[in-house]
Amino acid sequence: MQNEKLQSYQELTSAVEKYLNSLSYSKARIGTLQKGWDLIKHFMDGLYTESYNAIVGDEFIRSVLGSKNYSDLCKREKDLIRSANILTEFLTTGTVRFRSKLKFYEFKGEIGGVILQYLNDRKLSGASEDTINNHKLYLHRFLGYLNSNQVLLLADMNKKHILGFIHTLGFYSKSTIHCTLCTIRCFLRYLFENQYAEHDLAYLVPKSSYRKEAHLPTVYTKDEVERLISAVDRGNPKGKRDVAMILLAARLGLRASDICRLKFENIHWETNTIHLIQKKTQEKIELPLLTEVGNAIIDYLKYGRPVSDLPYIFIRASQPYDKLEEPTLHSIVSFYLKRAGIDNIANKKHGPHALRHSLAGILLEKKTPLPVISEVLGHTNTESTKAYLRIDLDSLRQCALDVLPLQSPHYQEVIG
Image 1: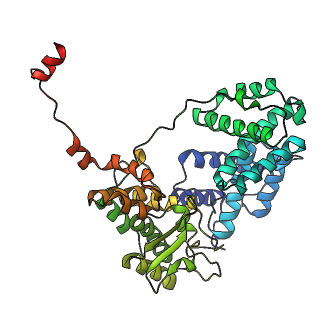
Image 2: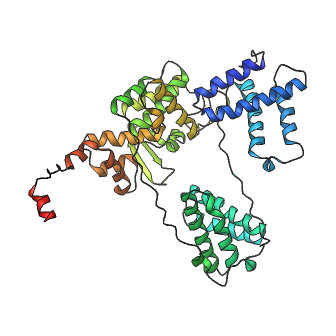
Image 3: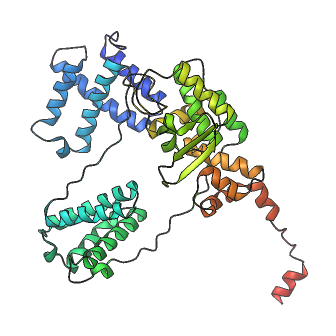
């Protein structure tokens, strides 16, 4: 395999660290892994071995697990296992795959069963996957609180338990408290409306005054976007793939989720169009396959994409040839922004969504009508697009009024 030539443990960890830096892993995350690697080295010293391999990694993991299940481990112990897995994976494949943390929540007992029924009903009513996952998190916390207070049946749940759970939310952020309260209120109302409870206890849940603050979208200038695209080395398979994905975000405004899920069937070469159902909105969208974008995709498919039966266009550049995930695309864009030498990246969003914002800004500069921008970005209505009006600074300056001098009759009239 790629890294069997690494003889010493120091060489291996240094190579992994360099690789993770290239993926834009944070210093804090790499620091956590390094602490794990130090403990693995101490473990290896106890085995009187200087060479790391998969067997050593498995032995270390078993020493961390002991007699416990993985789900019972604390965060530090899970980080130690992750440190060993990363070393083993890099040693055998030369890569480190991004792993999203899939959460599995158990809903046991009568109350847990009703929660599952509620979640299923919400799904059937059209709630998005993200919404369902958020409900799972908040309701799992609620169920945990009830179980810890020996409330195992719906008939035993009362005002005291609901208010007691709400009291435990004080340590969470304002947004989390707001979302939790909304979820619990809806669930309690569901219990009453479906005759699981005799009384509607939803009134006990206070309404939060929290309002999500509107942040100014991060945008890069047209020149900065061009520098980003030029920073990609198209002379190798990975570069061919990366530039095609970046162009889809920068030229067409596609979201990262839709770029990573793009399939061969979504591209209609005979009409030079892209047809897909957006993951976020579940709305159909049709976009023109611009010559620049189409040529980049063809170049990747002919000379860069590994042989694979996967239906997705963009896959990993090295084994295993899986579909790319959204965080990987974020790392790709971030990497090339840094390579392009664009200023002040640390204080800006630096993922593919920033390229989507930037496209909106460029279109606004060209005086493109708002409905057209909405159609390009795949918004269901122009209300979502209006947020971008705040980044059209030139137009906003034209709306500004001159400040009248203090001696103006207007002020005199007001004072009088």
